[in-house]
Length: 342
Figure (spheres, rainbow, N blue to C red):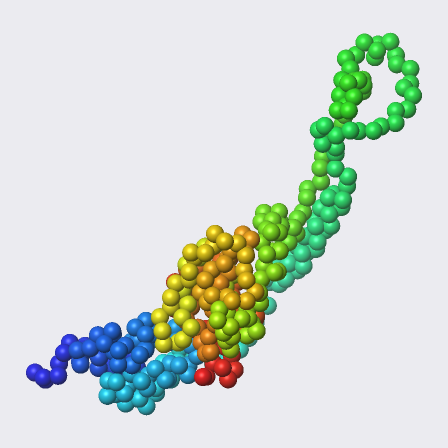
């Protein structure tokens, strides 16, 4: 048997991650020991060995990490980078000409069926009916509503015509007015049918989830997360990350790409208010019914969020989307342009 057989021969050594893992295990190193040699965080090393380079953005950092690991494990960095680039090309979507050809075939098939041609006429008709329904619903909503119980109703009664003797013995209905103890004998009111109310999407959202006006007023007074923000000790940073949360969300942030994220400090949320200077990085402040925290960095952030809903993230005052697939995982957030390559 080959003296170098250490249990990794069965692994497919056709990717950068598999080569690195095989070399590390051949030398009997753990990820913690490799971290001490390369100063690359353990969670980043795990992502490299699993070929999960989506967790390492931008690509410039992935190539830099591959070179560092190759030097530590006596591997060829050019081969690792070539395998990394090949994996990115293999994961790319299909070419555009093939997609356009399939689209043309689908259109010919669609127009060649008589029942589908009828469907093309049915869609505009349904849209027209929907518009008419909305118009009728809004007209019904503009009609004055019936007075609620207990409201004062002012009426001008016309002189009553003479009542025949037979009708005089008929039972009368008493209607009580809230601001008077007198009762008026009137015939029973006719039943009314209310028009169906058609609510647009915006009205329905406001009805089901009314905005928290106190939270909105507090958010408008928050310090903007821009490089002009002054942190504790008079520090200012090139990049400022601000997280605005509707509720308590587990969050951890690292201010360098080679360090592990540290949890936010929730110990001071009982004291309301956010200072406009002297911000402590990573401290969560209470802002009305919301919570806000700030971090500063010169290059990139490593962010770990426990949820994406109810979280607003800005980088230098510009909103950034929170990928749902990265919830619960460490993901690198770098500024666009020259700053991302530092």
